[in-house]
Image (cartoon, rainbow, N blue to C red; front, side, top):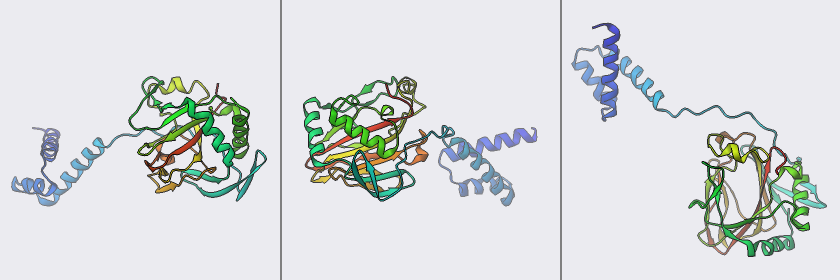
Amino acid sequence: MTAQTAADELRRWIVARAETGSGPQELLAAMVRSGWDEALAAAALEHVLTARLAQRQPQHEAPPPSAAVPEPARGTALQAGGRMVQVLAAMTLPRAVLFGGLLDGDECRALVALARPRLERSQTVDNATGGNEVNAARTSEGMFFERGETPLLAAIEARIAELVRWPVERGEGIQVLRYRPGAEYRPHHDYFDPAHPGTARIVERGGQRVATVVMYLEAPSAGGATTFPEVGFEVTPVRGNALFFSYARAHPAGKTLHGGAPVTAGEKWVATKWLRERAFV
């Protein structure tokens, strides 16, 4: 038997015993009983088990290249669409800004009234085909407006474009959602995962998503926070406020995993605007 053959057999023996539940101390004792020097046995165990652990770790692809993203101007109050919008909070990772007073009460109520007759069970993207599907992770009701569908929508979209410094034509139409008691949206990413086969079809219309604006139209009596579980950040819904966050890469490293916590009393209404790399058609 060659030295290499003996080494291969030892490696297979260690791996087999480890995968059936034998711990390092038990393996070390067995090797010493068979005549191994304890120090050499410990070194061999460490080498084999470390290599095996590395093989079993999931191999993540490198993040895609960074894209240009919308970026609001710095300051505590910003002019947008003839309105002074307050900057209530900001963070770097994820890149997020909470705006106060993006919409007024009349605008919030008008959006709810326009959307209410058109509500249907919310869907999510089907990652395999690029189409849409009903998903248990999302239990709201919703609808989409066409971009600029009414003068009110056009005015809000122009205001957002000025606020985050991103052209109107690079935005999807506004989606309005209603969350009744118990409804939620479990944590997810808004970008389209490049690893999914349906993504190529989706990004033909305007490229990848690069930012999200969530506008709170009606606050529930309890629950319904927008949560970022990886960073411990929560936003309480307040009528007229809006949360902006961007993602320069379609990758979890941007820490934009977020969700809508279950509403426990009342109803939550939100309007969501997604922004794309290029003109959305």
